[in-house]
Image (cartoon, rainbow, N blue to C red; front, side, top):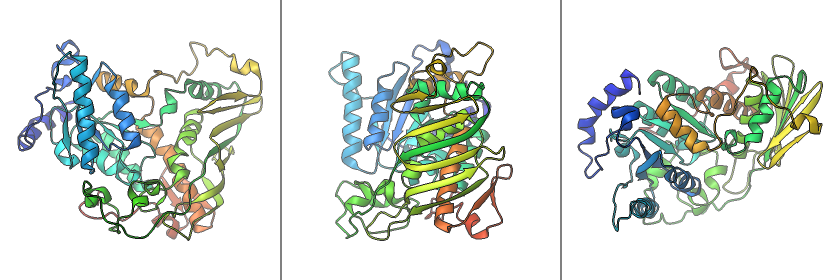
Length: 430
């Protein structure tokens, strides 16, 4: 059951939701509990591009969930995905027509519906925290794609909101479930099987340069102002919105240092739940073309314990090195200093991190049980801090010192100002 403050929200929200015409009358599973005739979690999906449509399909395939709403500023995307969902459930229920999924342009209308239990946030990066914060305030649990916030301040706000409202939060770093060898590697480290930890080395695929800057007509089916949201107003270009720009333009993202780096950084924090207190490094900030996020990064750091840290552009891997061996998980597999290390059986009394082998099911089960999912908010925030601090040390060209207790940059006012961004109204949430 959701806690009292979240249940009370539904009473007040019902009147607001009544102005949104045509939504299906699906009662939240939380009203009936485990013995409900239908105990499926009602899910809304916000952001329906490549990653968002994949998240939708994976969730739609779960018996424990039902997609009831989709939202995207592209009209064709939202209408096509609503049809896909309705056709799926029609086929599943042996009905020629079955309409359970409504399409929305404005996610705030979706969030006003009291029948939705949870939302998947798969928008461009600059929308992740604004959407997710408003969703939690509206009484929803959230699955939020990685990376987390566009700034350290946004990450703090997300964490504060999740804890204040008692929401379930799942971070979209799927390696915590789908690549279970990553969890096994983290267990080896946590339980001392590689001896005393000495270093963590993270590699993530490099970003891109280039991008067409010349203004182009806005597509007829796109609400471009809604797509921009909290970002500055800039002329539309294909590369900015439909191409890779949403990952490599600094107004919308930190680039692959965070966008892909989130995966190996998440595993680094899973195996060693701390973050470095010093960062220094180099990287290239492209000057020609549309894309202006850091590429070719090479960051070095140190944890308070003395453990060293590196983050470089390259492939995709997290390497933990200790006094008695090393282990290196990645999306593609796991390597270690010895075969015997890979044959270790974690004992019953030791630290166990693995929960499920399906990231989306793990989220839905957590919504039902109120148990923290594999990718919890606290770890998501900490691992995302690391990419931001790496980016800041590159952009300032100076060593950055981080206070892990106060969670602030020490002794550098200019760098400290870079821990937040200006957001366009009415999206100034911090």
